[in-house]
Length: 153
Ligand SMILES: [Fe+2]
Ligand SMILES: [Fe+2]
Image 1 (cartoon, rainbow, N blue to C red):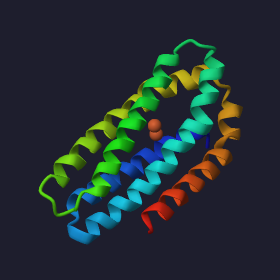
Image 2: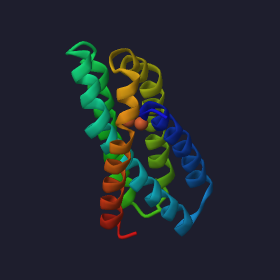
Image 3: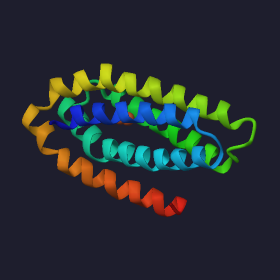
Image 4: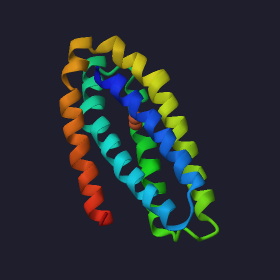
């Protein structure tokens, strides 16, 4: 499997986790949310450290805009995650805040799959996309664990 197919598979898992968070209550909701926070942190950091620089380099300055937009959307997500983490899950605004995060992430995953990935496939040879999967997973794990430590979970 190449790194892009792997990313797509993870997006599917994230959508499932979003539904689980939406239907959970109280402490359970917070628990799945924090797990999701750590997973997404790993995923976004791995994309930013391993995949985006390679695509930008291979595209040689063309289509930089797409990649830059992906990074900005990650930062919107990070911002909303940190607000949710600081808000009590039984606060009446929590669900509305989460719904905004969901919109940002759904839009982002769609654009990553439909705009970024075709560009990546065009400029990076398939073998290269295969060979960076291990690195992607190891960076992901590192940043996921860092977030877990910070969240004390
Ligand atoms: Fe992604
Ligand atoms: Fe992303």
